[in-house]
Image (tube, rainbow, N blue to C red; front, top):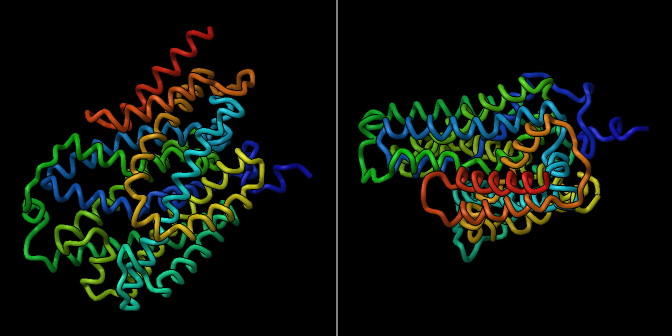
Length: 412
């Protein structure tokens, strides 16, 4: 029996016509991918530093940049039917692809663990009345982490079908309940949005705000081909990615911003608690994190499978166990490092894009390591993290593109 028939996730082969999914399923999957609670933290930062007009402009500018980047990757994934790791084998070489695979696996496993703690810690405090600090958390909190870890790992383990089912359940629930809670918060407030946003220091520029918008999800967005490869065509992959990323991220930023200016928290969970919608708050928080966490773990499994040659399911289990065990520690100690690592992934994405379009999607002669691509990623990551000017992710992509292009010219 062929690999295509036994592997519904097409780990090492292009997705064929039988594996392609409906446009609605793809839209739900991609929209759920963007429903990430950490993006609400960015919304809180934007609300603290910008007035209402500046907030909208930053949202628009950053959203367009993010949509262009992820849209290109969405088109490539859908047209080729290949995952990020299989595309990396072409552009980085068979062993050179281990670098982007390791980077995506490490960051996504890390965010998976952080997401578990983002669910367990607030629920432990509000539902069980426990005192949780960076130095201690009662065993009930760890039990919540374990339960959430098992459920979210299971959905990633069973692959793209279970990811789609979770998205069909979570996306409407989070979008509707979150929007209703946001509207209720505004109505219960003492001032309108414009007036409420005008309070505070407002010391953030629109460009800096747009940079926060781009940086909030550019790391996860690099994994876009892992999901759009199941779309029916390149055009469908492009359009759905652009709409889903722009809409989903905007909702997350709004949820975080509105909760910040009206309640003082950093996400819609606190807004709903303030409105006495306790159980709905837990439901929205859990589903919101679940849709991103299972996608993150799925990407981590594909990346580790490329490195170690084991099945995607095996690597998902290993990543899930590691992320679950380290979840609380990651939450308190590693968020800053993960944000730094976010800057390392856009250079990978731009090289995949340039390679695909310069070769017109055709695989060139197989190589072990493309050193111009590897050096481009390293140089791009260094520049993105240390150059304090403009957009960090775009700076990194520009340097990576220059290194890769120069290497191509030298080889020719």
